[in-house]
Image (cartoon, rainbow, N blue to C red; front, side):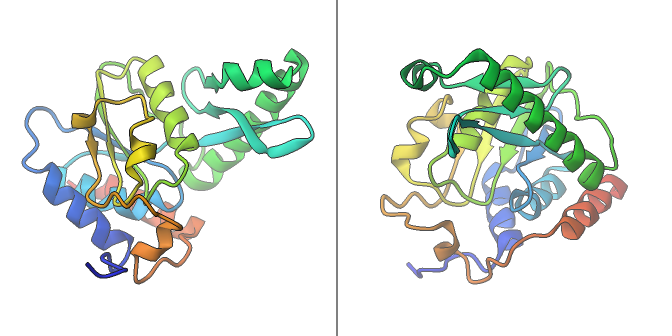
Length: 218
């Protein structure tokens, strides 16, 4: 197999879509993790004649080490917080830090919402089948938080569609194996970009353009 089996994110999305069709039942809600997940999800939504939107997730950093995630905030009505209770206890993280960090990340989510979605509220997921999409998974922290939040928000079923992820990471996600669509599962991932010929950064303009194009589709 080539070291770069996907041409770009759109190509990866088309290949995932082929594994998801034909879809039976009502069209699912396709949610992308921005920014890189949006071009992938766009092709899936188009193939399934399904609505496309984004799901905004922000990491909650540990005290004195913001790169160490002790949880995440996921947008919604209301927003969901997902904490790693074991890590919070091990680090003896004060409640005040968690509350301040949650408030800070919610403000950033609101700014992203205005930038990428024009301020529209997040879509309702309660009672719906949802396909969560990203362009690849390394450690899986953001995806894990998103999956938990969607379940907490009452989604009827959640599927995960990603072009590439290590099997040891997928095994730790709160989903049964039959609800994960991931064609490439290398044990030695190293970097998601290795599996794309073109892995240029997806910018805000592309995200808003694809969301608008998807919304305008019949």
